[in-house]
Image 1 (tube, helix red, strand yellow):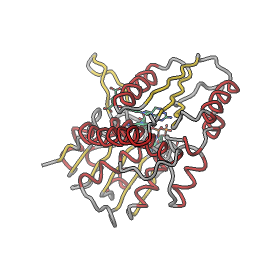
Image 2 (cartoon, protein in one colour; image 1 turned 45 degrees about the vertical axis):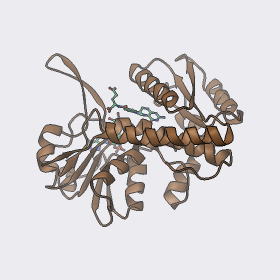
Image 3 (cartoon, rainbow, N blue to C red; image 1 turned 60 degrees about the horizontal axis):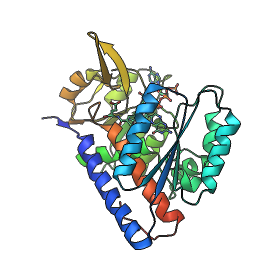
Length: 292
Ligand SMILES: NC(=O)C1=CN([C@@H]2O[C@H](COP(=O)(O)OP(=O)(O)OC[C@H]3O[C@@H](n4cnc5c(N)ncnc54)[C@H](OP(=O)(O)O)[C@@H]3O)[C@@H](O)[C@H]2O)C=CC1
Ligand SMILES: Nc1nc(=O)c2c([nH]1)NC[C@@H]1CN(c3ccc(C(=O)N[C@@H](CCC(=O)O)C(=O)O)cc3)C=[N+]21
């Protein structure tokens, strides 16, 4: 029987742990951690994510601060906002929702975020720390993906992991985290030759591409753990649907365990964001170690 990994349930557990840590910080230090989210433009999907993050942040007992700026905002003004948030002692975490409008350099804006408040883990400092195996803030989606894989098999050491996709947001940091778990990691991307054959080698197959059902059922090795990061909105039989990068119906038969879309990695991204925010608050404010 294939295990369908319940990302919603694992995320709910993690959010509960975060809420407990937040309550403890409030009681012992009279501090309420705060997350600031910056959204530029009106992309409908981004608006949904930002709303979900806002609700989840408040439910965990933290303060959520939203900055919604019009599509036409100048790069300088986004940078100025980030600098203000860096200086604000009440703000523990800063997330700039991607993608930014084309006229704004996300590289420039992201690197303005103070590394200690970079709850997305996307600044050069935190990416470097991850590469070097040092403590830092780790990108949320990759963190959530590894947590889900470990619900199936606690020790991933020695397993062959294939990560399809090499973005800064997901693929690259996910590969680094799996390496830190002592997996033998292959990074596949758009130039990879014979992707099917590469995938068939994987004990852990992670897809972070953005192409609906790119990964076919017969690319999945029998008994593999499949982590589907993809979130694709498609229209099928006249209905709007959310599907992953994996052909779920076919892959499910071969896999030992698989994450569904929705209800897999997506909810973990938000739970890990909350986790990073409480960790950032504790570190930055010198509140001692928190268990989450
Ligand atoms: N569940 C969640 O919480 C999250 C989900 N996502 C979803 O994950 C997916 C990936 O996101 P993101 O990493 O930001 O996407 P990007 O577009 O930044 O990166 C896509 C990657 O896929 C690779 N790729 C493109 N086409 C192919 C192909 N035919 N074969 C193999 N590799 C290919 C690209 O290769 P190359 O580098 O060569 O161009 C690139 O590395 C999207 O569906 C996104 O919506 C994203 C963030 C969070
Ligand atoms: N700076 C930045 N950091 C991000 O982490 C980031 C970003 N920008 N831009 C966009 C992507 C995408 N992303 C998701 C978050 C939650 C769900 C999620 O909760 N998904 C639900 C379903 C949601 C729905 O129904 O649309 C699920 O999969 O079950 C999905 C995707 C974070 N991203």
